[in-house]
Length: 193
Image (cartoon, rainbow, N blue to C red; front, side):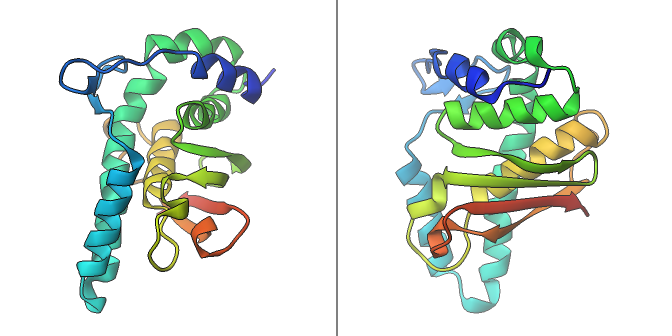
């Protein structure tokens, strides 16, 4: 039996994640800020707008990298947390595949991205479809799902690369479709570098 997405989403959505007096969330063995999406989007759009044309690719890469670094370290905390172990791990029968499915259920439950895996070739390729994600309605030009690109790469690294923290940068994620450019959904493809 694989991770049942709806069951995992419903169970994880009930988890009351509380920030401490400093606005940090310690539940996942890492400290995560609880900040509004609008703040992230405003920052991303301003920094991209301020970048000269010849530096835009570098700035975009930096935004994806920031999401990746957060996703890799926080992701390890999430998939090894008591919450994930209590809710998702009892449904895991296909090891890494189900853990990845559970991770995308967490993304959906916690409002990071209404997303899921539509194709998975273990340790080779993963295609994610997202019906909503942080940057889907942020304004600006071109494909810009920086957060989900970084998170998808991070989770594939955690699932199939060397054991944390030695598996960084084994895979890369490219966005091929985006709500922000008029597509009906975002599409993110993770492959080996």
